Length: 313
Image (cartoon, rainbow, N blue to C red; front, side, top):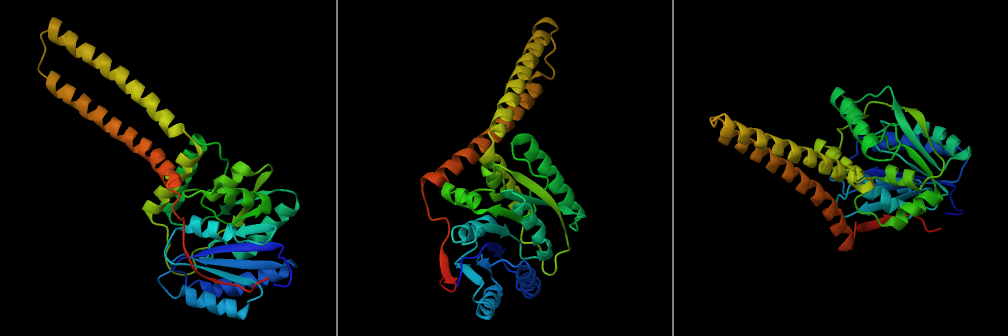
């Protein structure tokens, strides 16, 4: 590249061969029209289809502005973005999904907010085109996150976002393994904002986010930015212990003074099973936090880059 780019656009790619040609046709004209020097970094996250072949062809067609990171396996969307963060050259960084549900034509909206002085620009989807289940599951998840963390985001599932370079550098320095990048960026930002963006139906293919992946992502978000689950569990366990103790006193009174022992054994078994279930939930929560610590302490390589396609600066 002849000059340092002003703008870096990062796009994780996982099995998107049906969407990539349309993405190329729409994205590059938008970026050309901004009048800024730019680069586009695609991270191929272990795609099993022909996505990497299309990325190679696009790099060959636009080698001056296209870079490709090729993972050897699937490490997840956020690790694909982290790998690109570690290699960006621009002073403003935009993240975008490859499925075209967030139109590339909305990028100038985010850049306008950056130019206005904001260092972190989130987005929220207007007139969502997702299924009923995904739409309302997202609302529930947003509500849980709002009440368990200090992270303020209207729509945490929208990955069309823009950051100034110092925010991205701070994220990279954390060395995070399991993280939620928009929340991490918000925690480092001094002047964040949000903007509404259009939302389109997926151009082709199916979503690569399974129900389990969405649950896993939100576990990372809540356990990575809050101790609220442990605190809520402790309070709930205290209330259960108090209630169980009172119930035991009631049963003892009925047995001694009223000579009623017909349901005592079954009631005690019910209490026991309930408390065991509560204990298992607590163990699971503690395991989440311990597991995160273990992954950091063992210092295992977070991802492996098989190949990097780029034109040296």
